[in-house]
Length: 281
Image (cartoon, rainbow, N blue to C red; front, side):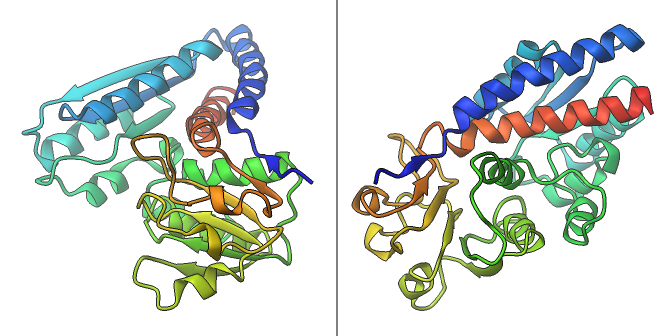
């Protein structure tokens, strides 16, 4: 039997149709438009592309975006001042600080300066803590997008053994907590895990989030498992060497077209939710 392709691009398109209807209702009721503010520090081409894509996604559903580009010599204090202005602006419903920022900036301090109600990318420590404790919070966009993929394709999570390879604060760690909250048994691994192949072979659900091209070998992957590849590298390859395991997995996310589109889609969804709460109460 052929594996199920967990098509994030298709799911994001259908979601956008529903979001556009919600935006129209919000505009008709209040006369106001949801706004996502994006902050880009420096001139990294990849980061600029991501910010542009997020602005285009807003436009497709009738939302507005406010793009701020700061010089690569920006200090932590200057960036904090910009975030404070956006926090205080009632017309801004979500704030995205594009990662990474130049090395002279304290990125964690700046992330945590974002107001919880506008942390639609789920990057603050407060948001992570609330999410982990099952309190209201916007989840980190990529892992939340992955959970939406699993739910849409009716992939069982409860009682399954999930292995997350990666421990970053905006992907691996929140991914593990979301799976745990969904009643999976979770193992967190990383590039320094001893005997990593044995850990991966135990996975009913495998999440590749280590940020190294094809780091997870195809012959490590368990038969009939679900493979979620959250990596994306030049040449269109992910963190998982899936080709060798393609004939025995139950389902997988393609690269590109799997997790990536749902990251942006989830950011847009959570900005819309923030706007609805702020405007409609």
